[in-house]
Amino acid sequence: MPRKRNDKENFLVMSSIRGKNTKLEQSVSKAIWRKGIRFRKNVTCLFGKPDIAIKKYKIVIFIDSCFWHGCSLHYKQPRKNPEYWEKKITRNIQRDKEVTEYYLEKEWTLIRVWEQELKLDFDNIIDQLADCINTSIKHTLQ
Image (tube, rainbow, N blue to C red; front, top):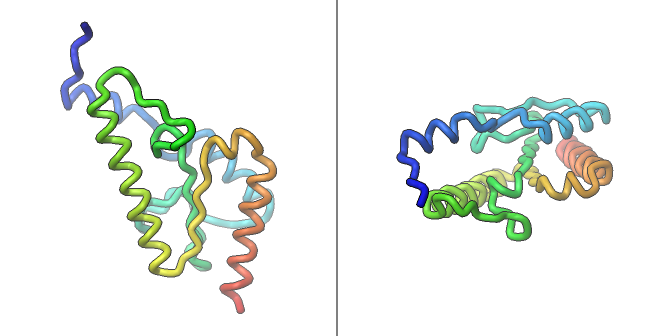
């Protein structure tokens, strides 16, 4: 039977995983930039560190991976160290809810895009994303 990792080993594994500027984030960023939408990435001064933000128009975008954000359709819990992963993913889901509530209370436009949606129909999702951003900008300018 394999031994469990201790907290230090878990930390070392987790610290090697990319948390920002992933390939998926890069693809989305490039696609909406080509549509003429200007933004900042991984804005640390905003709550929840959105993947993409347009502060001037109060728009934040989060690109959620199915694994890290516990997608109800695609998340599969690892067999090794299940207690750790259960706690980790549950906390991520809770944090997502807190971030969503925060921006909705502040009347920001919050957009969450699932990794799987992008993988299935990237161009259509990007078009929808751009439409949503442009609509929000027009609404803010009125």
